[in-house]
Each structure stands twice: as structure tokens, then as C-alpha cells.
Image (cartoon, rainbow, N blue to C red; front, side):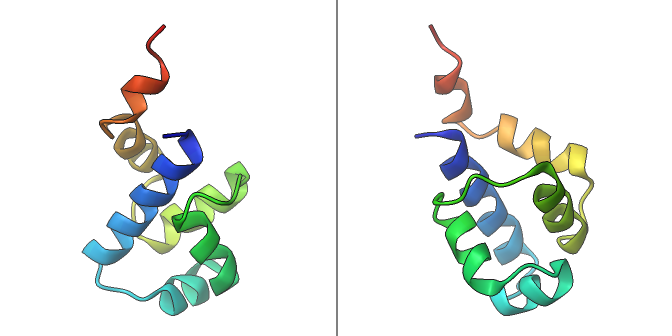
Length: 81
């Protein structure tokens, strides 16, 4: 699994925890809904600005979002050599 997929899974998980739709997240983050769908599927390589917008829309700090990603079980497999 790559970092894009881990990020996407994390965004989807946080969105579902908040019980909001992609449409609502799109509105709150000012990001197109189809782009959010691509992020959640791990198809998009996003900018820091987009990641920050998503964290804000999900009402979590950017640093907590990064911690969530780092705590994903697959994340550690990326850094094993």
C-alpha cells in the first residue's frame, strides 16, 4: 500500500466517524466532491494545502491528521528496509 492510499483511507475513516457525506466534506473544505472521492480511493497525490483544508473541514488539527496516518498499520511497512 502506498502513502496516497493510506491518506485516503484515513480521510474516509475520519469522515465516516463524523457521519458526514463526501458532499458535505466537499462543501466544508471547498474541494470538489469528485476530487475527494479520488483522494479517498488513493488516486490523488494531494498538496499540503488540500490536506490542511480536509483536516480543518473534519475539525481535527493538521498534526493530528498526520499522526493518524503515521499510526496506520500499513504506514510502517513503507519505512521498513
